[in-house]
Amino acid sequence: MIRYALHCDRNHAFESWFQSSSAYDSQVKRKLVTCPICGSAKVEKAIMAPRIVGKKGRGPATPPPEPAAATATPEAAPSGPTSLMMAQERELRAKLKELRDHIVKNADNVGERFPNEARAMHYGDKEHRPIYGEASPEEAKSLIDEGIEVSPLPTLPEDRN
Image 1 (cartoon, rainbow, N blue to C red):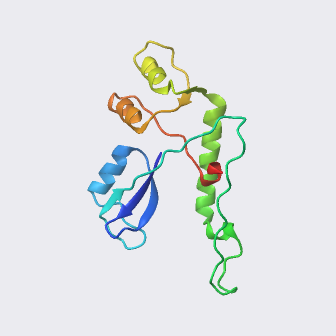
Image 2: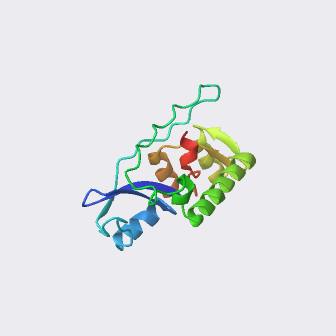
């Protein structure tokens, strides 16, 4: 699964998940991707910063800033942050976390060697085994273009802290 930051022609920003980059391209071409705010089908990818994972042993990440105080009346205010998240989203996040944890537990982390290791296994130079690691978007696209099946590990908001 790939998560893209998107924006519409009216500059509304939002995110969406896609099976692959080609699935995104296909859905946009068929006008199936629409802005959840205004409904516009003129949607493009926004510039995204890469997710950088620190090395073990470094200090904790800087916590995000506290949200601004709500201006709604107490009756209209939600009872807590989880009340905003639909049950389906919580279930999806739990399943994504379970999937990612399973991969991390049962596969070898080959780090930056991921593109080379994946190619070597694909072309029969190395024995197949489950691996995960790092690849730039260009490297991932190149692997997919070669017919090598790769998918990003799911990243959840709570992982960013």
